Amino acid sequence: MAEKIFLKCSAKEKTFANGGSLLNIGVKVADLLEFAQRHATPAGYLNLCVQARREAGKFGDTHTVTLDTWTPKPKGNTGDSTGIPF
Image 1 (cartoon, rainbow, N blue to C red):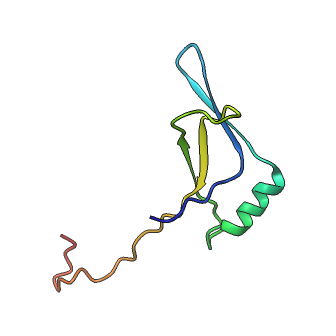
Image 2 (cartoon, one colour):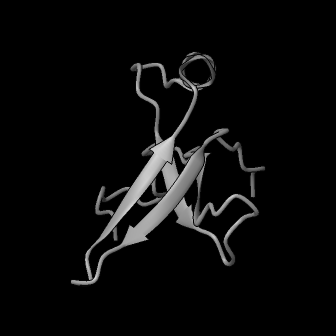
């Protein structure tokens, strides 16, 4: 498993009395631009994952934001000459 690459930010969930919730994410523009330029996909996208923390951080952060490094496996020969994928 690859090492997680964290975005330096503040991510806090706000839960409302009606059961709804909102995720507030704060990040410095300079940090976000540098992170985006360094980790953008060849198509120009920045794929991020937001995960809930087990415990809130010392500043009240309830979530972390990491770079999504998943890449699909290339479609190749299945080893069967019939071309059926199963």
